[in-house]
Length: 284
Image (cartoon, rainbow, N blue to C red; front, side, top):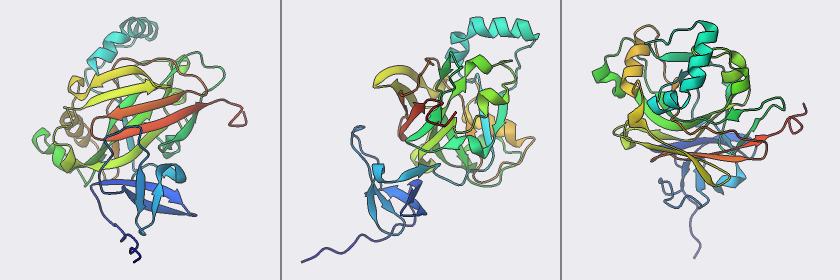
């Protein structure tokens, strides 16, 4: 007796977008849940019913991304970690620390998916990862109150927002070479439905480099929490479905080099893997 092929899955609470067989597909983890064993390779069910391994596909950002809104200096421990450098650069630039969130935008060209490669410029002496909770907007949102803010969230994902500190000119106004680099913002692997994340301020974050734990944090330590950010942003700009807010990183950023594998984890959202590649790999 032969078993029937798996039925296509069009919807799920944990979803991804991948390229396979010459086409782009929606996908879910087989069985609808992420494995508890982090070392276990995930099997994916494509929206046409086929089942493939996670290493057989090219991972894309897990949703159609709109505006990318990023936060800087949004964890108290990270601000403390950088206190001396912040003080030095602030004095050099006559900059005053803003009381409002430090917000900047990114272009779509900055984004790559899970298992992607990010270029490490040869002239960089200090390039680091930033493990972040990514908040995905699910409906049009304008002038949303804090009390209603989480109701406009479609779901959550993981971001690793690489930065080259050598290029930083002003902490309170990050320039394009630091924060808008092609392929410098890794997003995914999954879009996890908001119903599975009842409290975005109750999640642990962790980063490992080549298997060694280098960063540990908690979203409860954000300076401006998710609801406050949505209230703030929607007060002067209309948020659209697919817009994503990158909420900043905790302390523990270290230099990474070409060939390093960086894994960012956020509790309940999976593991986002990326590697650093040299200029030579990118034909530079």
